[in-house]
Length: 157
Image (cartoon, rainbow, N blue to C red; front, side, top):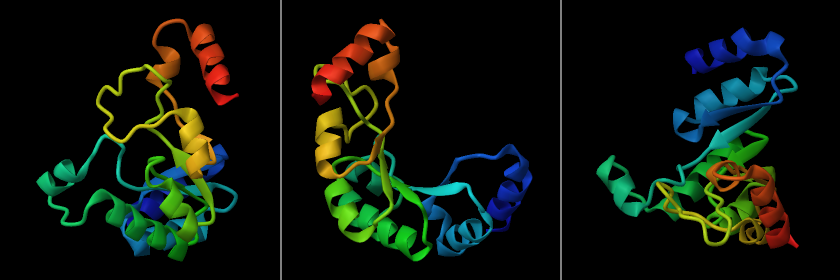
């Protein structure tokens, strides 16, 4: 908690709009950061989209992805965070608990490789599931960006 608070204090002058913190930092850290964040929106990062149930078990978690993300959504709510990062696969359940923004990574255009991401969805499926914002990287930046943006717009219509 002290390190997280020190970070917020150190960047106050930068007028950051959004700042992420891993929900696994704990409730005390989340509440402390939110308390001093001012106009900066605090975004809680849940389980990374590159992890699945097997990966969680390997690193010592006993809960499956869905249960752990729901638990983290409750912590984010309790800490009054502004947004949460979770996969679109968990978004339908998260939005029942957490009423802030739902930011979703692991977005792939139809036909794109999932690469190292295991919990991926299309942009339209993510919005349908309750995501309010998307994080997109390789699907847009690999190859011709203009064509990829046109493909994205076509898939959203």
